[in-house]
Length: 405
Image (cartoon, rainbow, N blue to C red; front, side):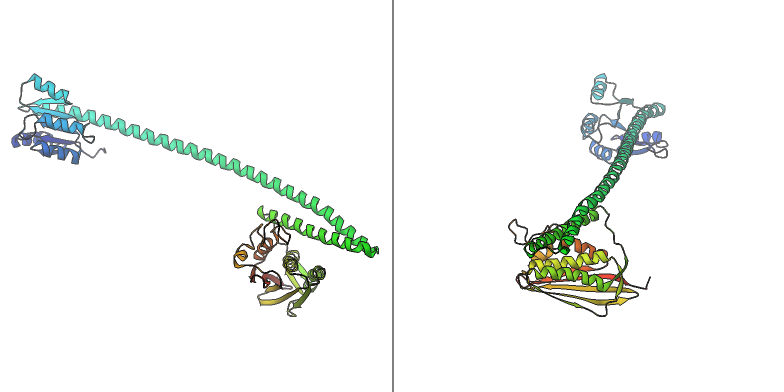
C-alpha cells in the first residue's frame, strides 16, 4: 500500500444511527463502507477487501457469529480482522466471538477515542503484516534476480569456454587438414609423375594398357582426394576462391583433352563447341572453373554407355561493366535422372544410385561441391533430364574480363 492510500474499514450494523456514528468517528482517517445486513457485508468484504471489519453481533437475517464464520471460511477474507460491536454484557458471547476468530470487541454506546484506538491497533497489525509480506516478496524477487544473474554469468562463462574450445578445435582441424592435404597429395603426385616418366621411356605395348589403367585410377583417386579435402575445407571456412588472369583457350584445351581421352576408352564421341566471342583472357579462379567443368564431363563419360555421344559447349551469356557470365553445357546420352533424383542430386553424399550393387562408382561429392563452387563464383548449376534419355547440365559463373579492374 502506498503512503497516499487509506486503509479501508467496513461497518456492519442494522441500526442506521450506529453506522452514522461510527462513520463520523472514522471517516477522516479511513475509507469507510457500510452494510446493514450480513449478506451485504459478505458481498462488500469480497469486493473491497477491507483492512478491518466492525461487525454487530445481533442482526435480523444473519447474526455476527454467522457472518464471521462465513468470512473465516472464505480464502479471500479469512485473514481480515473482525472487531465485534455489541451492547451485550455477556462473557459467554464474548468468548464465542473470540473463539470464532474475532480480534477485539467494542461496546455500545461508542466512545470515539476507544473506537479509534481499537481500530488503529488492528490497522497497525495489518500494515505491519503487509509490510513484512511485501519485504518477503521483494526478497524473493531479489533472490530470483540474483539467481538469474548468476545463471547468466555461468552461461556467459560457459559460452566463452565453448567458444575457446571451438576456436581451438577449428585451429586443430585446420592444421590437420593442411597436413592431410600435403601428405595425401604428395605421394599421389609422385605416382602420377612416375607414370608419365614411365610412359615416355618407350614401354612395351603389353605393359602400356596396365600403365594406362594405373594412370586412370590414380587420377580418379586424386580427384576424389581433392574433392574430400575441398568439402571439408568448406565446412570449416577454409575454402576460398583465388582470382587471377588466365588463358581461356588453354584452360578449355586442358580440360577437354583429358575428357576426350577418358571418352575414347569407352569408344565415346565428345563434340565440343566454344563461342568465339569468349575473351582469350579472363580473371577468376581458373582451377575451380576447370574443376567444375572437368567434373561435369567426367560424369557424362561415366554415365554414358559404350559408343555413346557427349557434347560440350561454352558461350557468353551476357557481359556488362567488365563482368562476363559464362555458360557451359554438358549433354550426354546416358542413363538419365528421374525427377525425384534430381532434387537430391546436388546434396552432399547423395548419388543417383546409392546401392552397394550400383554399376557406377563414386562417393557423391562431385556435383554437390561443383554446385557450391558455382554459387561462390556468382553462378549456379542446373540439370534437365529424363530417365533413359540422357541429361543436360548447365553451369554458369561470373568472370572478370581482363583489363577491367
